Amino acid sequence: MSWTRDQKNVTIAAYLGWTLDAFDFFLTVFVLKDIAAEFNVKIPAVAFAITLTLAMRPLGALIFGRLADKYGRRPTLMLNIACYSLLELLSGFSPNLATFITLRALFGIAMGGEWGVGGALTMETIPPKSRGIVSGLLQAGYPSGYLLASIVFGVLFQYIGWRGMFFVGVLPALLVLYVRSHVPESPAWKAMEKRTRPSLLTTLKHNLNLSIYAIVLMTAFNFFSHGTQDLYPTFLREQHHFDPHTVSLITIVLNIGAMAGGLFFGAMSERIGRRRAIFIAALIALPVLPLWAFSTGPVLLALGAFLMQISVQGAWGVIPVHLNEISPDEIRATFPGLVYQLGNLFASVNATLQASLAESRGGDYASAMAIVAGTVAVVIAVLILFSRERRGIDMTQSAKQVASNA
Image (tube, rainbow, N blue to C red; front, side, top):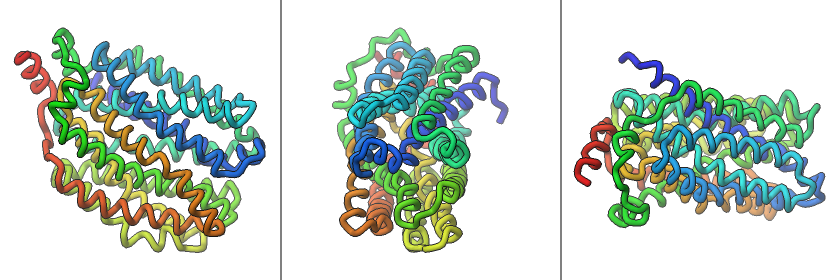
């Protein structure tokens, strides 16, 4: 299927937007230990910054999603990228822990907006038959950002320290120029541009069961991803005492698995359906758990991490398209991002919970991570069976019908 230049540019911009957003987020997880040392506090105190970042993301999804539904996906995406880049830069200037935590909370607002806006712009623009693979590509932006952070940590950390890591994080601002010059507005949004839209609350009330279900599902999904990723570098450094170079290499392998999983299951969902692809991917985590959490050497840990992230991001790879397809047309820039980030809010306790549980067990991060990963893999496999299957709907035509019925 041939794509137009505009469709390609939209996909590139949305992928890079989420990649660089995740890059800025994951820089923090590599330097928890170093920030704690500088501010003379314990790691869980700094991990609270991750909790706040995740907790504030629903507010960002709501603010930027509503802006995108009202004023368009394209200008909102540019504003969003500029905001999270600036806040990342400012984080590197933090004089104390309180300032750092405040800036990470504000970063969470900016981070929360990108996924929903970029996803809506892309899914409304590309050919319907391409949505599965593109969904996997968009979600692969998250491990791509983690991979990029892994490389920067391994190569530059010893020279620039933790503050320099955040200074590097301002670079995504350059993406705004690309969006401004190459990315068009969504045709589905244009179809509804002049229509008077119902309020967000009215639309959510009309879709109450769907909204509650989607939030519960995304809570489980966020425990799945954050429970297997956020403290993994700390697990490698604290429990196994690996040097930064080894930690970097293992997380690079981990993220290659994540990208492969997202692309594979995203593409598979186009053939076997969204629900079935998620079900299969989530259950892969169970046999992989012992290798992932309880291996001792770096090679086996890397293999376990690779396979675990095929499962985690394989399931996640279907989520951008699935949430966009089941979303009400009137609030497609708001709904997927909002339910995703509300799930993040409820799962935001993960980093602090796992760090505290590990310390209470004498630094046993392995058990803390295994408990979370195994539980939520089963929960996701059960929950997804109750979802709708709307593979391949025509979003532009659907938006026109909604607009004409108003």
